Image 1 (cartoon, rainbow, N blue to C red):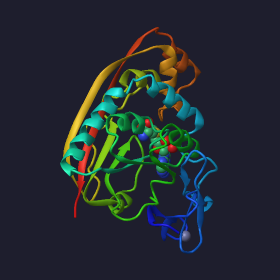
Image 2: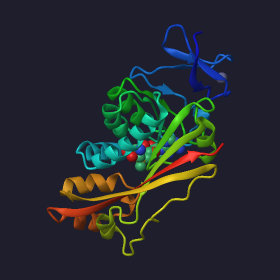
Image 3: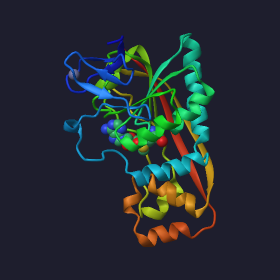
Image 4: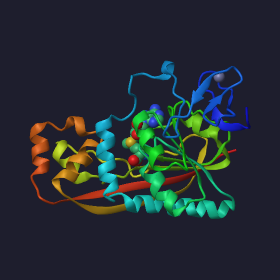
Length: 277
Ligand SMILES: C[S@@+](CC[C@H](N)C(=O)[O-])C[C@H]1O[C@@H](n2cnc3c(N)ncnc32)[C@H](O)[C@@H]1O
Ligand SMILES: [Zn+2]
């Protein structure tokens, strides 16, 4: 076996080491995990799965990919990149970053182009999302796992990025270095308000700030909002990638498709926090 890696065995939590073949990782107890042909590692054992295909469905992922690749959320990728660039400059060494619930890696790719020195790790519970992400960005380290049980060594990361994805506070604490940074992106009050108006009779707005997770101190909170001009096919994709898609019955979907162009607000909150020590 070669040097120990960033990973912990998901079965017994012992450190994993890359085998001499370079094609699998093993722990001292002999649990072995092969790298997939796309280069990712599946560290989600069957006993930790609650369904055969956990996470977002293929349809949701395909819709998100089409929408994101069209560039609609590029200003968000740029804003995340600017924050990370500040952190990297202050740190004076290559950052180790974990993108938690990374989906099929849109933000990883965009940000990697702007900040190629970041050691980029991505994790998602959906295997086909990770396979797609790993194929498109072979320089990054992708893992199938749950954010509730992060398969990484204690204090491995400088930064954890969480964009519209779930996480576990204790696990965030554990994998971040002392004074490590947590960057969380959540929807602001006006996010997709015009789309939601087609779905809900009574549109509830999101809060304009999120609670800082226990064990962290907020450094900054930044709001980013702008308007999108959307065509019917883009609205169909946008609806499919949101949690309110299942509420849209046939009539509402038809109504949403009717306008040739619909202007929709985006509203993102980017909260940067520091881990307490
Ligand atoms: C709304 S999507 C956001 C994806 C990506 N961050 C983006 O903004 O494009 C939420 C992602 O979290 C993943 N996810 C859901 N539950 C998870 C869990 N317990 N552990 C890891 N990922 C999870 C889903 O599979 C999905 O890819
Ligand atoms: Zn093990």
